[in-house]
Length: 143
Image (cartoon, rainbow, N blue to C red; front, side, top):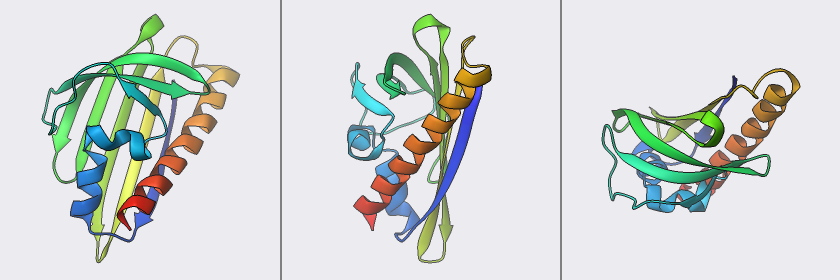
C-alpha cells in the first residue's frame, strides 16, 4: 500500500472551498491526479454516487470506477474504487473552517500487489507532489 496526505490553509470561506472540491465537473481545473471522466458526471455528489475517471500517477493512467463511500457535507467526502490489474484507489477530501480561512486536507491511498518496497515509496512521493500541486491550484482559484 502507498498513501499520503497533505494539508493547506486556504484564504477563502469553507463553503467556497467545499463547493469547488466537490464539483466533479471542475476537477480538471485543480485536481492534478485527474485526467478525464469516462462516465456522466452528476451535478451534485451524494452517498453511493458512482463515476468512472481516468487518474494518472507517475505517468501511469488507470481507469477507476469510483464510488462515494462517505459523504458528510460540507466537511468530508471519500471516494474509492478499483481499476486495471485490481489497483485500488481511495481519495479523501476534508474541509474545516478556521476563522476567515479554511484548512483543506487531501489523502490518497493506492493498494496493489505492486505498491510495495521502492515502488510503493515512489508512488507515495509522487502522490504527495500531486496532492500538494492540486491544493495549490485549488487555493489559487478560490482565493
